[in-house]
Amino acid sequence: MLKPIWIIATLFLGLGAISAMLPQKKNRYLERNAEELLRDVLVQEYVVTTDDLAHLLIQKDPSILLIDVRPEAEYKKYSLPGAINIPLDSLLSDQWGGYLDQDLKRNIFFSNGTTLSVQAWMLVKQKGYANNYFLKGGLNNWFSTIIEPKEPPSDAPEKDFRIYRTRVAASQYFTGKTDAPAPGSGTAAPLPKMKKKKKMVQGGCS
Amino acid sequence: MQKKYLFGFGGVMVFIALVLIAISFDHLDPYSFRYSSNEMLEKMDDQTHLLSPQEFIDLRTQQDLIIVDLRDPKLFAAFSLDSAKNIAAERVLDKSLKPFFQTETTKVLVDQDGLQANQIWVLLTQFGYENLMVLEGGIKNWQEKVEVTTLDKFTGFKDEKPQVDFAEVMKK
Image (cartoon, rainbow over all chains, first blue to last red; front, side, top):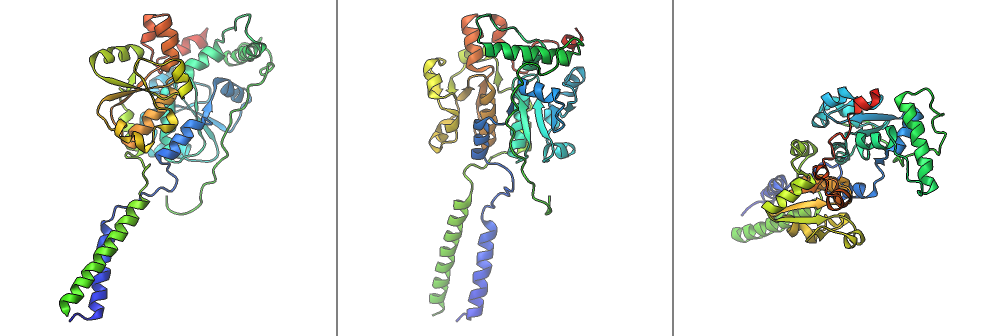
């Protein structure tokens, strides 16, 4: 007859073996799952329009950091004032972690269109990094709306003319013309809705 | 007597194992991503999932495609591409749609301007669904440039293609 102590010991060993073979739960400290990321996609609060960006740049807002995610060759040819270059293919390398995973600056990703910038945004969002946004329409839209704004048709509502006048002023500011009217003399572009900074947990292993 | 103990002991072990497995599967997140961000970045490398309107038209003549229109039903009712299926973006993760997204037929995601379709492509690909593509420029570009003006250059619409030489414009 087996002694009770042997039965208990075997029971614990068996339980240990079963526990070790069970599928492990992923460590989801900050990472988002598909459902949470879909929610972020749908609310669209991480979208920065070209008018928002022009306003932020004219105000010399120190809290924003422009991140050009295009290849280096395109960045060298032309980029937005003050932008740094983190090409999409090197986005997740360790050297950029300090820029992307922080709670001091509001990063605004941009590219020629919105394809590369929004892909960069999706990747960092999935990793749970806060304070990352993207420029809707990218440089193509920046040039067609801010640098070379088109006058609205004469029967357009007054609101469209106000936006146009603001854009003309912004264009003159960015292209460096000295006869520019004071920036922001038209209706100021609305500030983008920025999410509150997430407080990072201090200490622990990284 | 010894056999009786062994049977009882075995029964207890099997019962506990089943309980542990049930608890474990209950805690597995059904919405967890199949690929990590780094793996997803590799999948984005060639950007071959992006179809210009012309590439979309060509591909449609070569193979069966299912067009998935991600816009809300009102916009879909107002205008949609031929034989498109309306699945509003907020529904893409519904469990009932899993068998549909797991079929091998290529699905082309379409939205108003191409932006959200690209986001949903990232989401669903990272989630584990294959054979997904995106129509660049969305319905807006399609309606304005392809169907109305039929200008050839717009059928080649690529979101990331510079529309002007930025450096040259700034020099003017």
